[in-house]
Amino acid sequence: MTEEIDPNKIIAEFLNLKVNDLTKISENLIQGTKEKIQLTLKTGYKKFLDESFSRYGKSKTFFYRDSNVNLNTFYVPLGLKCNDVLIKSANIKALLDANKNIIIAGTGGAGKSIMLKHLFVNSFSAKKQIPVFIELRDLNSKDLTLKDFINHTFNTFGLDFDKTFLNKSMKKGHYIFFLDGLDEVFPEKRKYLLKEVDDLTKGYSNCSIILSTRPDLNISELTTFSIFNIEPLSLEKSINLIKKLPADKIIKEKFISDLKNNLFEKHKSFLSNPLLLSIMLITYGYSADIPNKLSVFYNQAFEALFQRHDALKGAFNRKRETELDIQEFSKILSIFCVLTYEQRKFKLTRIEALEFIDQAKELSCYDFNSSSYLTDLLQSVCLLVEDGLFIYFTHRSFQEYFTAKFIVESQTETKKTLLKKYQSNIREDNVYKLVHELDPDFMEFEIIIPFINDLFEKIKLNKNIGISHYLRFVRIMWEKFEFRNGILFGTVKNGIINEMVYFIILNIKNGKKSKYFISDDSEWINKHKKNSVDSGKSKIYLTADLKTTDIATKEFYNNARFFSKGILESLNHAKKTIELRKENHSSKLFDLLLKEKA
Image 1 (cartoon, rainbow, N blue to C red):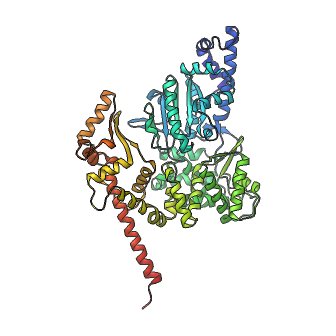
Image 2 (cartoon, rainbow, N blue to C red):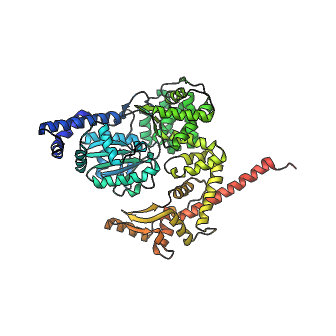
Image 3 (spheres, rainbow, N blue to C red):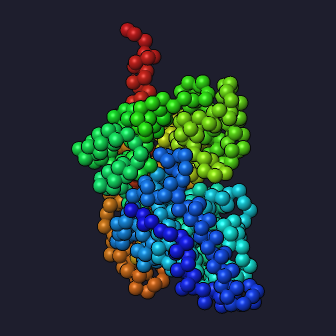
């Protein structure tokens, strides 16, 4: 449970410990006697922490929509794991004991942002560094560097001191920065942001940084960071979360009973995710059927929310302001979602939200009041939440589902165009996975097979996979292989191709996976991993310099698991699986519908 804290007491205790250091920093920067300077510092930092805690120490959620509530009302501490290091319940001390620079990685709905807020609050109790919470998505609408944005955040929350003073206090390491949502930054900006984060760790090495993101191909480039992955909910923690949610008591008891009686194990991939578990509680009051696919789940969730058999406060119908039926409402929502997804808009002003709804209204050709539709999204269907001056999706995954739904329901050329356009987002979100679930034939026949054929043509692969095919493939996929800190990394050369390759391997059913993915490391690879730990130095192999006769090429080819020839083998298996299914599909369709009766 999140510890209750008194921000006034915490900042007072902190300044009593640090006031002399802060006063020394302020020499020639803040005018007045020593006592006046100390009062100025205490007043500034108190205002900053009060404002910050008011904004990030509480939160609105899917269940608590009318006002911000303390995190401990609904938060269940999750586990974090980095290699062999397991933190059973995330806390700031354990993380900073592991490393002063931390990446918290997790998929959609895993609870990254709430965990970061929990750690932000938890850091008050640590009393070591001043917590500074940064919402990175705000950089999308601002032409600022990360350093400038930090200064902007200081000013926004009332720490209006001279930049030279703030710079010196950062040099001294007085701050812990919580950088939330790297994955929500525009892809074209993210590359530069990663460099700025790296520069921040070098320029202000005494400060601590905790950054949250969905799994990202390039976060391994932040070499001073330890990457901790959020652990899935256990049955015990799932039950604790359900108990905290403000739902109908009878429904909760029935749901918990079913979780204990094998429901959790049967649907662990869904029910171990905090967001999906929470929404499942609502759909459970609507239908006790638990789906096996994400797309079916989101459809059921939307139907439950639209019909509003409300598991939050017992069964009742919440009146909607628009008279749209469920199909019409869904159609408009799909357009709204794809328009906002296209611009990577996860946070909107009310004016922006209404502008997007107006566009959806024009494209859908339905007649309705845009303001009423927005009210329904906020209050009836509850897929958006309003917090202060901004409107957010209850969770990005709803935006992704309705974007996928829009794509699937579009004409063929529009489908192809949008899927090609969104290839770079495959790892970051579920749009591709959801489209594949909703329309597997189109995705596999029209997108995946042409992709594999084009890739095989580039590496001149017709039948058997040889080391020369592998080397051509490696040069397309990666710039270099690197042994660093006991791990073998690959630096991506072509992100889109890389994303597609792994999407195919992980998502094509009956596509036989290569034995090389689960084989043990060879003696050569183990030796290089050990050397990178013992020496503290990296060993780099540029793919452009590798030759088929090199021992390194042969070792990577046979023994590098997800960098081995096993990738090509799995792609080949997937290709054969899809082509066979397509052949059977066409043959059966002809027999059933087109073949003339004898």
